Image (cartoon, rainbow, N blue to C red; front, side, top):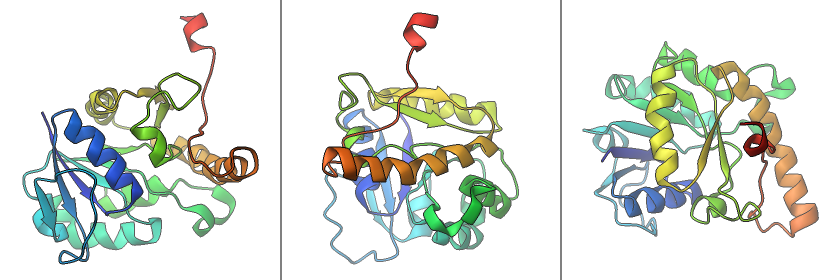
Length: 209
């Protein structure tokens, strides 16, 4: 099983951390407020500062706001080498025009696209632990990366959550996923009462394989 560090303590940290601990993975949590009460839904093997949380992990989930990602990487780049980096951050209005993906800025900060993957960007936290929320079928996790090894490393982690990985091509294609998120929030509020149990699905795959 893997040791996964989640940076951030919000809804996605709780959803992913709970799902992966249930699957037998060890979860370390990095926070800028180590002494705070983070009300985690799962038992983490470590909760503390960013640098300490990164020690000994195989994968790192960037579950912090997009504007904080660059600074985090620049401060902790030496602790990220060789790890799978899972960027789940969403830019929302910070990238006007949607000309580049948030994950492309992450790659610039890292200095490489090796072992970097954009994923979980259009998955509401509520659907992570309820795999049948999407009309009774496991939700899709859209994955974009330049590095095939990064995709291969992430796919079993997605399966361990009871979800399905959908390969969306190179890292730059994450810009299209980023753009879907704002509309998803609007539709969920308008048509589902902001339950956040909805999501996008690419359908017809079962009939074409």
